[in-house]
Length: 438
Image 1 (cartoon, rainbow, N blue to C red):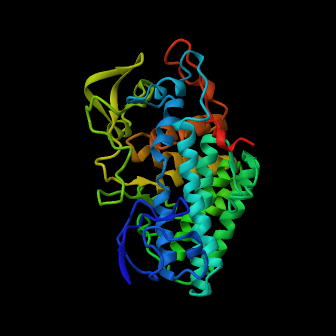
Image 2 (image 1 turned 135 degrees about the horizontal axis):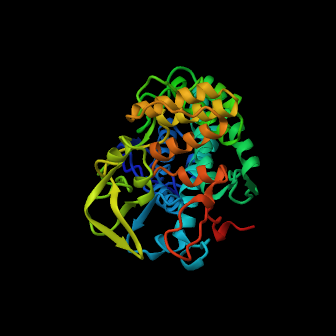
Image 3 (image 1 turned 90 degrees about the vertical axis):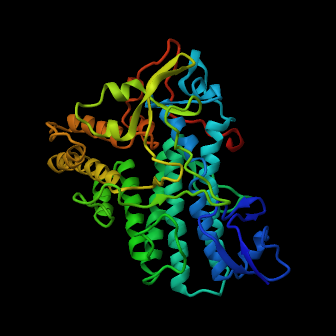
């Protein structure tokens, strides 16, 4: 029996392919419900087409929780406000009147759940590959190399918000412990190396199709994405030499297009979702408002200000907070969101060189960023001055992309943030959800 099915699949409550990226035509045995096949049905001798659906599910799930994580961390880092109907976005996240963060509400639970949804889907794919005889060894390596790479990326996003992560979640009945940052990062880096080994043994073509990885949709080119993430992980782990080695095998290009890299893709197709960070200009509700300090402290002539934000016809206010600018980061509700673009790799390369003591090359990389956005070369040359320059370039290049809170935390600078209202408190880490407490 043939069915044209929506990619949204549920396996014992686990959204496996959800949020369709493409239409798929598959053949199932008549006794299997195509709208809700059992988990066991795909974990035992899955077909290539079933495995391909799982790949789509992994990619789609990477988008879960991305808006809440981005606006939550951005608010805590005083780079934006989310003005909407929920007072916790301007209350809890800014420590209004000394309020503490809640470990059982949307801003702490949704990012965690979203990232672990993708990780769960990747683990199911890995298990299904191990239990099928319908694919070749090269194809098996392609699936697992993809899944391990995505798992590692998602775990890094968990660490950025929570400073801790539960890495071993393959067996839901026997979860591993929640690890502190360093131990978790060691496991992530090892996972990336495993993924690279699998990709190197995967042949010349993927047996599946990816939606947002144009130019990175073969084992060799996806391996470059893997190395980009490995470079990121090494930088975050303070390992400059390893970062430089990994980035040298990525798609880093000091002379290349800044926007090059994989992306989260969106559409208005049935079953899919639109870009949750797109906001209509001058809308009175549900707005991402730019923190005044991001505008006021921008260097004269920095083209990123006009590119990423727009001044409203009328300034807006909520809960004692004010703003005249709002986001213009995305042109429409189907604009893609970058996963890891070349611009970020250049910034990571600059930081890796600083960690390795190559200060002139770090300055050179930062000048590539500055020159692209209409700024003259930096005058920074010392370690301290280059660190300040790096953080400033990351602040403006990566605005509203879930970086600023983590950057300030890892450099011990969170308490330098402005206090928006008397009685507000600065927090730089989301609490691990109540349901995860051990």
